[in-house]
Length: 446
Image (tube, rainbow, N blue to C red; front, side, top):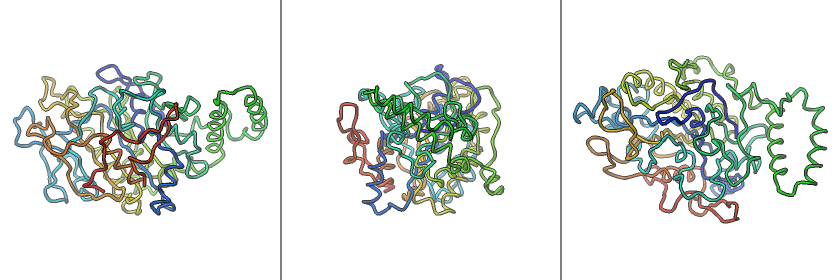
């Protein structure tokens, strides 16, 4: 697992450190193992393709009724300040501050009826597709941890998972890059900032690796003789992954946006400074970097974009943030199509919950777990549609409730997996299903 660090601190309304919380946005996929994925691809006849997922996590709880589920006929205290605009899909309207997304609505689908959110600032459900209660011993592992244990890189020198999310020492929910029942040796690999400065192994740069490699090997042999716990085996795996990254230029090249066509960089947008000291991670570069990483061989990339915990000044904040999301997300969707990657690369956009129907006294919206939205693109799915509906005030699901696990089941299927028959083993050796019982792929999309 690779996590790219940001440089600022910030907390949500409940005191949760935003930067650590963001790393929880990593798309965990329930501990999927690489051999299962490769076997599933072979069964599906897609072994030569590169299936990948980009998870765009809007940390803090984005206001669904001001973005993709506007209610222009609702009372003033509900409908807010924005008007809907038409898209290139008849009958589908979105917020006026998303003009670029309106032009490519045929390339994505909006779920307006996400249900089952826990209600606090916790990315666990977007991380695993499950509620945080009743976990197996050790907890659910992230995808990155599982792939670390199994040498889960698809290309030598490239990690299987990259998290473009900042993180600090405070941990609102266990270890943000947790290895779960796989053990601590498979926790997150964390270079800082843009992903280059800390790409060293215990302080040793690639120029000094050759002279140290034989010494490391000798120590590893010694530890293997005296350690019967299995942790050394896991540590060797981590070292091998770190060595592969350090001795290969592939990851560094993927992270180097200067190699990209400058006109395309302008289409995505450049790095955007933090306007407030709230830990906002608003780098439009991340959308382009995500595409470069999956193109280079990464299976799963997470973007943690901006801060959406707007208990006050909801519409003023939206006027800053919506155009940025519109620019970066629309560029990513169109770029994947232009490169023919849209059938293999799935994109999911969501937050941990929605916001209250009524606008509060501070012109903000508060936490609302009853219903929220998700946006799905790519993955060879049928797009240009809306799934589900909410009530007149966007406060409750009125039709076609969709669970987090249903979205995960859909993504598993696009990876060539059967979300019901493919399993992973926990600490006791017990096989665990990839999604909770009752979760099904979305029939509208697949």
